[in-house]
Length: 392
Ligand code: 13P
Ligand code: SF4
Image (cartoon, rainbow, N blue to C red; front, side, top):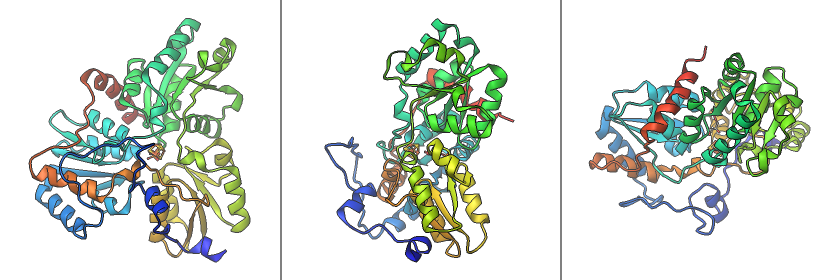
């Protein structure tokens, strides 16, 4: 048992582990995105020196943002690390940087493009770094749902709220319909604001963040929430269910946080007496209910930093972050909540070779992988993002 609770063990260096780390590719199941030019080999012993030199050559022209779920090899080059909310704020606060290199996923880079000036360029080192949750809400589906709400006469009292983890199209839809973006750091504040504007919320795309915030932080009943399934006619809901609901939750979820189960919580409590269970609100409702603490990645970091020496923590969030926290706090027992390896494969697509390639291309005067949101979408999405940044 001691090895489970007190010692961090790296995943073994097998072909499977390498694939899980995103270093390999399965052509049958993964979208391939070729980088123009020469992508350095992962085995190149000079990668750190090359990234350091390229970043130094670019100086203040480049600003590197790193989400907490990024690999250590990448995070060491971030000028700022943070959760989605902090990174959105930081992107907006750097008007002088010519290039924002976003080490995160596609929807984050889109938000950064919307929040930065037209003279700035936002770059995603690997264009295949998407997000399965964001992909679960497609604009056409969302518009179909909204038209149904209009036909039912409930659209006027419904405020659309989208989690940051959604495409710019969806944020644009929300802005056009006087809603707000939220992140896991400010979901309650966004919902408080929304229920001052209307009597219902249409929450996209993460059902779990919506349900967990409404029920556990705002005192709603589970019965106040209904689940809109875009793959069923009229969301699989009756008119009466939609009329009575306070929270209409989109059927989307995070494939990483969705892996944690009530069994994982019960199991760790049995194995490690006195363990504190700390999870992200993207986890399923029963997991969050069974946990001792729940919060965004920034909250998780602060909780672990402040924990007393000798305390034990089972953490339900992405593995790069949990692993980094375990290594930073050897005096605390910090372990992953699940027994199996659980990286976010799309976050992991940004690796050191892609970062080196990006920075060296910039030094050479070429700007790769620019993320651009069209003006019309950006205008409306910005309304919803600004509303989030202005939340009390
Ligand atoms: P936060 O960064 O808002 O905690 O969200 C976690 C996440 O899943 C990002 O993709
Ligand atoms: Fe998307 Fe989940 Fe990965 Fe975040 S952790 S990028 S929500 S799949």
